[in-house]
Amino acid sequence: MSRLDGKVALISGAARGIGGETARLMAAAGAKLVIGDVLDSVGAETVAAIRAAGGQAEYVHLDVTKPDDWTAAVERATSTFGKLDILVNNAGVFIGKSIEEISLDEWHKLVAVNMTGVFLGTRMCAPALRDAAKDSEHGSAIVNLASIAGIVGSQLDPLYSMTKGGVTLFTKSTALEFGRKGYRIRANSIHPGVIQTDMGEMTFHARARHTSSNDPEGARRMVTNSVPWGRLGTTTDIAKGIVFLASDDAGYMNGSALVVDGGITAQ
Image (tube, rainbow, N blue to C red):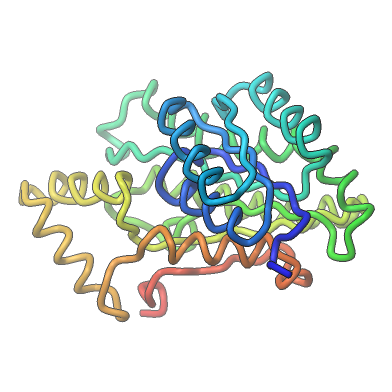
């Protein structure tokens, strides 16, 4: 029996990157997937690849800032697969501008996706997760994508850090509220370090700009050299952690923060 046999999962921002790899690993572990994203053509390709490998997956257009999109995504999960056991709030954006640089519109976008999207996903999926939990020994699970920037301060990305810090404490508060209400929905966060994704590349360019070096490759080397494990993280490193938190193997983890950063925050 695989770790997620019989589970149904909804993942936001799952067309590519960490979300896409999480969908692939969850399908391989036996889960049925609803993949949500705004990148429709890429999302369709991800679904096709999962199906070609023998998995079950559906794609929905999901702008995490829109309640109606969340309603449609939950409806797809429950109508197609009969329930919803797992929510992964993965969608996120990185602006890479300082407190004095960022425009108000850019700030609103950062908050809308990174914070409002997590709140809406949790709110709109809670009834279906609560219903599924009634028939599960370890209940249902929410996994929120935070960051090590949500645990320690960031001199180069203070606003991204602010949103991810919000996700960190929201996760703990969600665990407490749902526990008080007897919903049997576990909520945990995962905190990647710098990962080799499109967003990771953006951080190197932002770092190079902020330090006036104009050398993204130099920024990459500097960050890599700061990791005690000696390399940058991969999408698979993070996806494995998400699968664990979503599975019954983590059935007694609730309100926890799982750090996957190669040792950066141990320093």
